[in-house]
Length: 333
Image 1 (cartoon, rainbow, N blue to C red):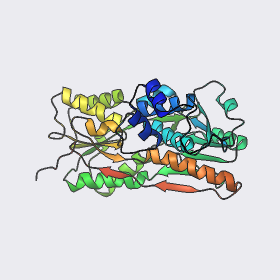
Image 2: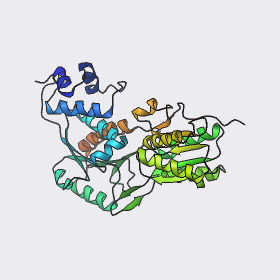
Image 3: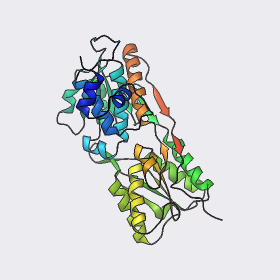
């Protein structure tokens, strides 16, 4: 039987780190890639926690991820959701079948699972097909207007409002918004609800924002390009609200290269609170989205729904929290 030392040796990390990862220690400061490597190694070696007999899996849970594996690593918001699911399943003896929409014949991989978690954005046609394939289904990070289907989403409305309350509270009246475009189905643009909340808030509070809205993709390079677009336009806001931390990191790099200091010359707020946010220069003020917990709660709720199936669907909205660090500065009056 595999031991923690065996996993540590195979994964190239310390036994202490392996133990804390396998016990879901959220205080452990480790990269998502390292955490995933340890979990994958534990499964490959058929590790079972001491004190628990090796028993047959309770059931098989299917995970379908709308991002590709490469995109998942570039913006690890969805990676953290998946890790939350997999950590819960590992600790509760639940077998996992995992696939990506970018995989060939991904539907065939999921046809024999007992229940299904869908992470990300899906077209109405895809939602209908997935529900027909497995009615014990739950969507994470996407509201679904169907009373039969359970969903868990972050409270984006309150999150954007809290971030903008903070910026206006320290004197900012000209605020930009950097976001990424996401497409579902046949190149159908999925609307970013945060953009609508941002615009409505700015209109209600007489803020200047229209010249400073930029849209690209959820990557560091795109944040860099969006910031360069504003710089080349010759006029900057006093603050930027970025819809992801990677976008914020790219923007900070562009501003720094052009001699524009953060936060002395421009303030930046990110979104997600990924691990690197606390180590950026300067440490990033950002909205902490409960990605990992959303995954854990999703797996737990789906386990309950499977026992009670068919039963009423659940519509859950999780709160986000603003984490104030050093990337914002008050406007001097």
